[in-house]
Image 1 (spheres, helix red, strand yellow):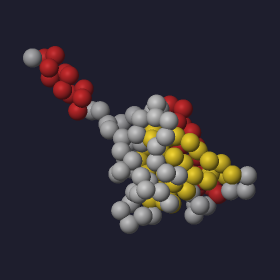
Image 2 (cartoon, rainbow, N blue to C red):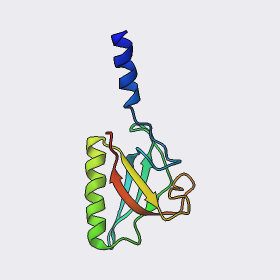
Image 3 (cartoon, rainbow, N blue to C red):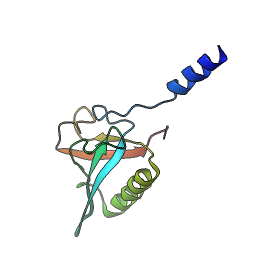
Amino acid sequence: MIKKILLMSLFSMTSHASISDCKNLYVGQILLTETGGLGSVVYMNNRNDTSGSYWSSFVDWEPEAKKAALSVLMAAKFSGHRVNVTTKNADGCGIASGGTRTKNLYLAPNP
């Protein structure tokens, strides 16, 4: 009985990534440009995926904010920590269909 409860509690803490709602994502490809620094990012559902979302751009971000975002993205990528994002799309996500501009980026509560 105790083993069953421990197993259930372990599974309840597991986070599931979803490019459809922009939560608990892994950082995939990061595009850096010569003139603008951080350009766009591809997010993935699973660390071992070879592809994921469409590119989500940071085109509207100020240079210092881009540097801070790049730091968060790189830390998450190297550590395997997940991130949550919101975009300027009407639904706040849209990375599964493309053409998005990132509005907010933050580390997910569960790595």
